[in-house]
Length: 325
Image 1 (cartoon, rainbow, N blue to C red):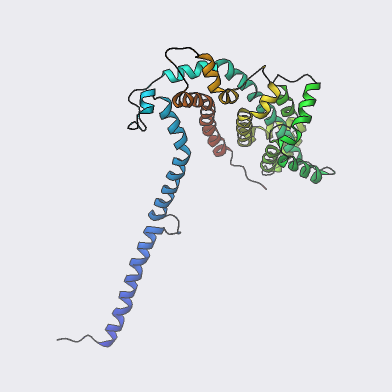
Image 2 (image 1 turned 90 degrees about the vertical axis):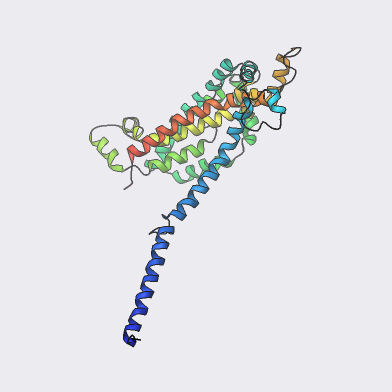
C-alpha cells in the first residue's frame, strides 16, 4: 500500500478546512444574505411579520364585511363562520335609512372637510414662519405652542363653549372652521410641528432664487414652497379630516340638535332603529348584521379617501425627493 507523504497530508487538511468554511459561508449567505439581512431566511421572517401585522389590522374590517351580509338565520347558525349562504343586502338598506345617510354624510363632510382644509393651510403658514424666519422669542413661542398639544380638550371645553355661545356660533360648523383658520383646533400643534420639520429640509437656495426674481414672501410660499410640500400637505389633511370626522364629544356639544354626523348617529343607532321600525312585522329588533352594515357605511368614505390619498402620497414622495443643505 502506497503511503502518502506527511507534507501532503498536512496540505490536505487546510484544503478540507477551506472547503468546509466555503460551504458554511455559502449556506450563511443563502440564509442570511451577504449583508446579514437580505437572505431567504430573513425574508421569510419579514414576510411572516408583515402578514401577521396586516392580518391584525384587516381582521376587524373583514369580520365587519362578513357579518354585514348575513341574514338572521346565518347569524344564529354556528356553522356559518365567514361566508354567508346568501348575501343579504337588506341590512344595508335598513342601515342607510336609519342613518339618513345622504343628509348625514353632507353634514359630516361639512364639519370635517372644511375645518381640515382651513387647518392644513393655516398650520402650513405658521410652520413655515417657525422654520424659516428668526424673530425675538421664537423658541419660547414654539415651546408654548407644543405645550398646547398635551393640554386635554376637557380643560378648555367649557370656556370655548361659552365663547362660541357669546358669538352665536353654536349649532353651526363655525366652532370647527374658525379655529382651523387661525391654526388652532384639533391637534394643530402636531400639524405645525410636521410642517416645521418638513420645511427645514427644503434648500434655502429656492427662496433665495425666488427673491432674486422679485418674488415676495407670500408669493414664494404659495407659488414655490407649498407646491413642493405636497407630501406634508397630504399627511396633515388626512390626519385633520380623520380626527374631525371621528370627533363626537365636541361635535355633540357644539352642534346640539341642529346638525348631526355619522359617528354621532352610530352612537344612537339602536335607538334610531327601534324608533323607525317600531311595530313593523318584518323587523323586530336590531341585530349585529345591521349594526355592522351601519358601521361599514360610516367608515367607507374614509377607506375610499385613504386608498386614493395613499397612491397620491406615494407619487409625490417619489417625484419630489427633497434633501436639505
